[in-house]
Amino acid sequence: MRYCDSPYLFHRRISREITIGDPTRGGVRMGAHHPVVRQSMLTCDTMDTAECVKQTLELVAVGCQIVRITAPTVKDAANLKNIVAELRARGSLVPIVADIHFKPDAAMEAANWVEMVRINPGNYADSKKFAIKEYSDDAYTAELGRIEEKFTPLVLKLKELKRALRIGTNHGSLSDRIMNRYGDTPLGMVESALEFARICRKHDFHNFKFSMKSSNPKVMIECYRLLTARLAQEGPDWNYPLHLGVTEAGEGEDGRIKSAIGIGSLLCDGLGDTIRVSLTEDSPREIEVCNDLLAQIPSLTVGDDVRSLTSTSGISQSLLTSAPTFPFDPFHFERRATPEIELSESAKCGGEQTVRVVVTRATFDKVAPKIRPKDDVKPEGIYEDLNLLELDPTQPLRIEDINCDTQLVTVKDGVNLPPITAFRLLVAQLNRLGRHNPVLLKDCLSFGPSALEPKIALLRAAVNIGSLLADGIGDAILVRGESGAGMSLRLAYNILQAAGCRSFKTDYVACPSCGRTLFNLQTVTARIKTRTEHLKGVKIAIMGCIVNGPGEMADADFGYVGGAPGKINLYVGKTPIKFNIPEADAVDRLVDLIREHGKWVEPEAQEASATH
Image (cartoon, rainbow, N blue to C red; front, side):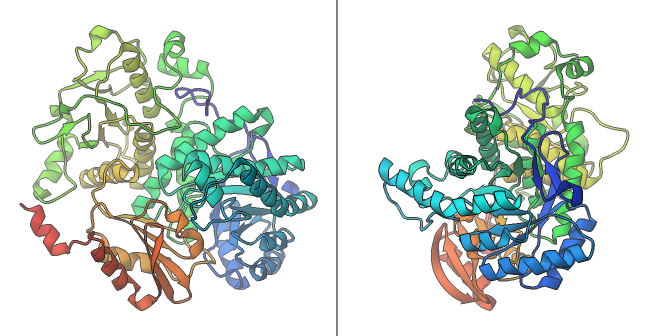
């Protein structure tokens, strides 16, 4: 199976064109050769018409092209009529998407008023009680028949009204039937979506797109790769558009890094027709990141044909032809096997070692005086002092170019290739020679006349290094695009944490808020972080409602979930432990729960132990 034409040459996947609304009256054409579409979601109560209109207009003002609004009940879905009418009266023609979970009746009502309906196959017409049950083939087929009976009326209505559909599966939010046959896996997510797509096609309805979201960028990347490959297997007319997003990415730098790794990696491989950056912040901030990320993709990829690549980089056609199609398994993450070597006096890399952080001598001289023995964020190697072999992957490598497997290698500066392409090609050549050398990844191979703006340096480093880490490539990393010494060091560690390669701080999975949210996510997230941000290696999910928890918390250790207005439920993994805790007490009870499960460390005690 293949998810893209080449891991070395940029070719955008040409998907089937769909329309969201009437393109002659403000609607959006998506797929085919159209530019990638930016979208976001409202955070207010769907019954508050005035606030919904206000937030929608604010999003449109910053470039949002599609706006999603939750419709958890039939009553909410009916109020979409008033929201859309007021928007149109104010001259806004932006397409509106109704977000549906659990309630087919709400979807049927919403379809009357909005341009698109989003459903989650895991909970639209299927059961999700986290029950362990064996399904015989007959029982499985019978369940599919029941789903088709419930889903078909929506398909027929969408077709009649010329609406669009998003089939959106989420990691950790699969039905019991899918979970028990495929597990909580990318394959399960893909098969769940394809079941619903087949029902659409059975009724000659094709105006739909897919999404495969996860809060884990590596899982998200695998899902979209596998979906794209499976669609290609199904046939040339299965080339439906893809909506990209890392769900519950969180806030601030962490949310941007996670989104850049997941979305940016796929965009650089030519996948994606629309994107959303899900941040626990005000929605217009999401569009700013969408714009910044999309603006980087042309310079992070190469021209869209071989002639452009060969003429600008000097790569020979024979080298591209001889390189393995993929120097990594694109559908199952596995870190590339290398021997363990000495990186510096204080650190080893490769083998079973964690991915290490290297800095330049200039950066080290600036940050070293501020580093304390107890600090987790510190340089583990100095670039200029490394026993490092720099190679040009645009030229064929020979066995005599590399003396042994224990030589650390990297791509030399000045190579006229994007970093993702350059390092993939380097590893392909190493594999061809039977070499397993550890690799030092760089976020950039050349420098412009002026320093990058910090927010752009962050996105570019996250895309370049994060994409390669998701491929399983890389034993140490070097960030140089960020000119601030301390900021570049911190950014390197944050990329490793977001890519799931290393844990040096508490990991938070926080949903971006919507009309279903039962508490102020930004305020509560800040409160929880203040109490728990010293818990290295602990993952805490902060979910505004039961829709995003427990299922979509996926692999979090603990969950803080809105259960009812003013009431919080606490989880250990996917298991609810405490119910209906008053919100004023809930953070304290969360700390108690972490303590009960042996994960709590007092901040002072942690600092004292770290000095020994």
